[in-house]
Image 1 (cartoon, rainbow, N blue to C red):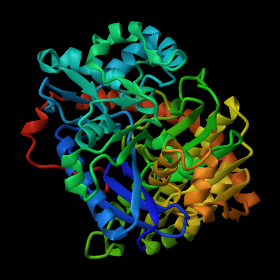
Image 2: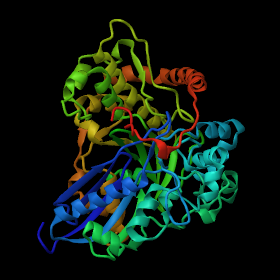
Image 3: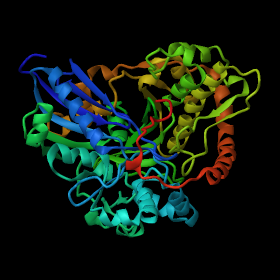
Length: 527
């Protein structure tokens, strides 16, 4: 890029990596820098990260992206981040806890108690966030029960984005999108609910003030030196990764669903006001004050096939241990008929989010016989993931009409994923370009926030003019028929295996462990 051109940086701090992308305002050029970080599992069910490691990776990614742009004016830096995380800080703003990620399931007991007592329904109606171990609400209840001494030394309870913003700007704030995902925020009145805070045992003074997602703060001098940008550069606080991803996928029409499939998966649509699922399975979070994203996520997406590659076909992986999709592995699955000859996988390698209740059943292969090969196991894994997302689509369609779905994410580079997903959805589907992600969504929201786009649709179109051109998928009717039968049986299978999971939880539950004492980080499944 030459001098005189302008770019905006979209920064998405994700679950296992941060992606900083520079988008030219004319949509012609983009540069991307990525840095990864480990997920720590000091105890089974705990999924935590060191917040300072994530901040260091974020600064490195931004600096690398700025260096790559070499000349153009950076008009703003806009943030997105993984939602539902929780960090405790002391009065000196030093972490008293790790980042408890959305995958951390230690608070399952607290979530079950709220469901058993009947409180979950009112909590969901108020907050738009289902009662689930991933929510900060349940995590705070866990700390109150199990580490009350830590609660007395914790001055602030914040999310991942809040910590990154503090390190970039020196301000400790949150924004509407992240607040709406805490399980403590009244999405109808746009304030924290005193009743919910009282239930959790946290005061509003322990939570950062809530800004609009379009607010901007000046980049601090120290952060500017670290990333190579002038101090005072606008930092748009942005939204969470789920709403940002919907914007990046250009799925901002209420009749169009945006389905993203990478390591995890999600299906969402955008509505004008908070829309709460009476079945308590879907999430609702803000993109802006008058654009709300409703939908469901699954923790088990492409990571399930990555696990299958490590566990079942290590010979097909490169010597480097690269865990991305291996064409040879998926070719094994392509030879297997739809339905995997009666083999079904419930792909819950990690505690899931929707639509299966509090934390879902354990992962399981059902119907395994001696004639099944590893190709069957891999195809059943692909089908299991797609069936879970099909269940999210069914639930979402009961709340708001869905006339079509845009598919985005690295998984859909593979024909098998496209074919199975389109057949399971059984509605018009298109594969959009790979740029449609939370980093693009963050940049588009930032462009709108600083007044360089009149609305969100224009902002996405300016930064990614090719995104409107997507490839339609022809649905194989015989496949769609086969998967309809599987989808009808799935709820019963989930219920039965869920009961088995409750028994296993009782058998395998163990004592807590100090996260700081863990010296052997373990990656997430298949990482």
